[in-house]
Length: 198
Image 1: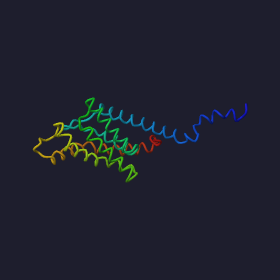
Image 2: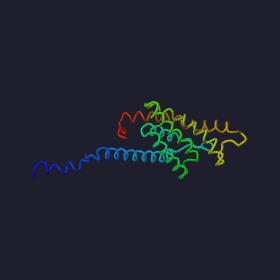
Image 3: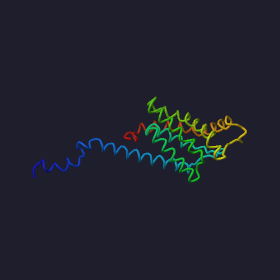
Image 4: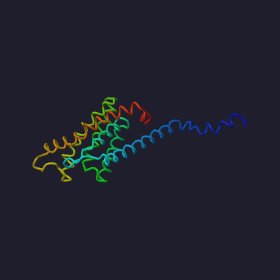
């Protein structure tokens, strides 16, 4: 058997033809992102069970959601971070470890971190912008979610400003420590190169 015949299968299995030059690495990268996203959702749900969250008014203080928002916004981008936050919130509501505010309190923070990291500043300190999105989530909760569900912390006559302020306090008690945890976790992940290839 000639040398060229014996090497033919190796070259054929290399996926280096003109039509597949970039497809395999892109598919592999997307697969890794899906696996990491699934792991982040599982981590968020598991942490909501143990150590769990702290009930506070109509909400629950759960800093680990905001930690995951910061990590995902930086490493996976705004779209994936929002989908992960949404999935964690929906599962938490479904299993009873979160309230309806798990979505409105979690998704905006993931979006802000992802957008700021992608378009303004590519540094890990962006994790600390997560509370900015959470304040937006407090506004959404006060204006839309609480009136629709009847879960406002104050009676309706107290007004939207009071509702927003109390939701902001509740959400920041969760978001501020979560953002710091997210920043520290991001630095650790960066040093260990665990998420380098996603």
